[in-house]
Length: 271
Length: 329
Image 1 (cartoon, rainbow over the protein chains, first blue to last red):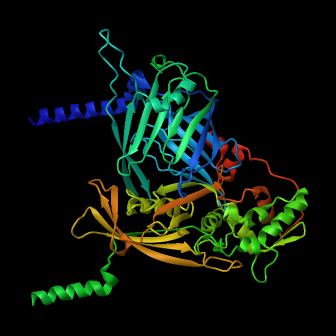
Image 2: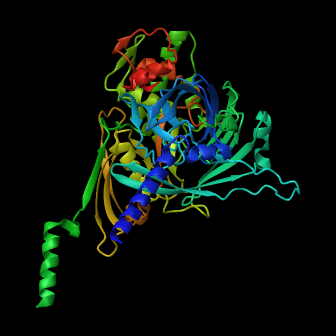
């Protein structure tokens, strides 16, 4: 009995080990997700520009500061935390600001693995690296940066194919709840973020119609359960980044596309 | 007899720990050098355009003279500021109206002017430089935390919440990233001051092990100084609050306690860079050119300035931040 118990324990351990390895291997759930959902794909040298307008939240009324254009450039693909990462440098395009960011994003699902913010101070330019937990997939928030590099969790869920009887109308996927843990100064702060995806609504039609090329369009809402603050992003399969990103503090638009059209997701199978 | 023993124990704890506070742990953060103190440039007094006793011509008259010497054209900064329709100088303004947000941002983003600068033969004393910088930073790009309380229906007087405030202190001051500006008045009024230092201590509540009782003293740079003041005059405020933990020890929420319920920050903002005027607004003097301002405030004590600046190459900024591009990319 005792020996049987040990065997059972051993098999359970091996099973767990196998599942764990699978979860972080290339054929893990990210790959499965990539088949059923959308993850932007980039190549080294791709670049695009976002234009961000900033609301002056200190002032009365609806006052927006002049926009800044940010150049996103894929500088390299590097191996970090046992996976390939896009290395993206973001710098201002139309203003002489000493503000930049360098993002290391998993090529599998764009989860952040390393985030470096560069910013000016009275004593010169400084950089700071965030503490990122690579084993805890979460959204990327730019709340401590001027640069609008917010990202939802990927893959985004594709709409199911309509059935022959025509009854399978679009039903949005269940919202994903993400416990966003920020570690700072030895404290861990937990924020519950809800990621809800739905069919783009009419008020965002102008955005995606302007860029409509090919592929599916996704509307993602990231909301802070406690404060009620939210951000709505519109993603499209043929675009390298969100076409638009709106919150109470920022309005961001993708203004040019120089990146190559992403590969059809199905063709990435077996990477 | 038993009651007497309890009383003695309580007295012992009070004796070794003032106010009965025995800390589990503490945190500290400080930005050095501290943001400099400067006048808040009252709109009613109009020192920027009129100067003050013993100080003529005013800072903006000197600026115009310098730019005219550089370019052959008067930029009209003084004229714009002196026009009461633009509300920057207004003898009928409220006593509290001024340029405190411009001073706060300049004190964080610019080194303190500590010596007179002679530019094309025109003297800019430290007070002139602080005045011009305070105007330049009236508009800034910034990161904003909390919600401003306008005392309208739906405005939350408890916001900014202490868990967010505590996180910001650790992130910006604890990590030596930047000083941050705080509206110290939780109600409709706005009093901007830079925070550059904090000391925080806490203990676990005796009645609830998921509650940390926190006491945090925050140090602010003050603007209640004369225009020619050099250095940092400071004041401090102690806030008390509770932080609530989940079963994993993560902080999930917080509440202000004691007198901090009605004496806590309203919102926090961290200036990142100078910004131009939004269209149709008069928040900042649009005639002021950052390029000429920095020709005045940067560099050697005496210069006949020529030439402009060019935007830095992206990788040169990375190097300036102490990073190696070949390691990153």
